[in-house]
Amino acid sequence: MSADHGAAGTDRPIRVLLADDQHLVRTGFRVILEVEDDIEVVGEAADGERAAGMARALRPDVVLMDVEMPGVDGLEATRRITAGDDVPGGPAVLILTTFDRDDYLFAALRAGASGFLLKNGTPEDLIEAIRVLARGDGLLAPELTRRVIATFARPGGSVTPGGPRTAPEAALRDLTPREREVLVLVAGGASNGEIAAALHLGEATVKTHVSRVLAKLGLRDRVQAVVFAYEHGVVRPGG
Image 1 (cartoon, rainbow, N blue to C red):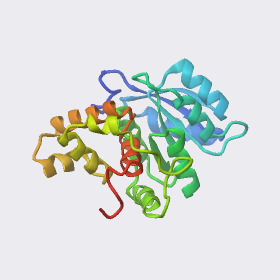
Image 2: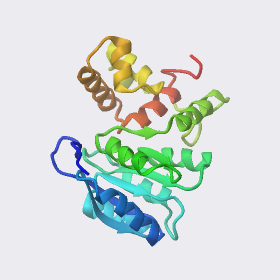
Image 3: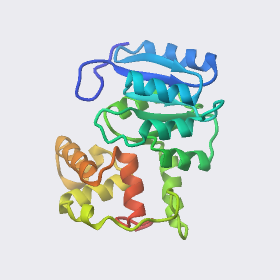
């Protein structure tokens, strides 16, 4: 199947590492992905420890990560892969699980995952999610985004250990008024097209603003931006 997508900033295919303890599941993912011209499966791992090691060795663009695996689970593997990942081009982790549980969702966000999908989705959902993450964006299904926001609506709500953190005022002051507007809209789940329409800007300009916001705040993707905005009071649930 032809596609015009590729790894961010390159013409090469998106390199994907599969991590799942079930061989048949990995085979199914490989069959789905390898018919796409812009996606290349570069390795498979049956446990989290192996996945973390292969991610370091192979440097894929996206790691497709199961949660429940023997030994080191997918959440710990995600932490190992994303720990100290301030080097551009580090792998993005897409959590893909059978279990629709809030504790897995929030643990995945804390671990540094860039996306979270359930295995009851369609092959098209999976392929699009991989492309989104490879572009440097984060991905949560709308219903999952609502759950994240609902968490902040509860007293003391937070997805990070220890409750809400003190706002990094210096980093926030470094944002221009326009960049702050963009952050607020990102936190509301708006796409680049929706932000462009709301602010009467071109989508290319919005993409540049989003990239600058992430860089100034030291964030990896839009998922982290949503969490940051709520935890640091830039936006509030219902406000």
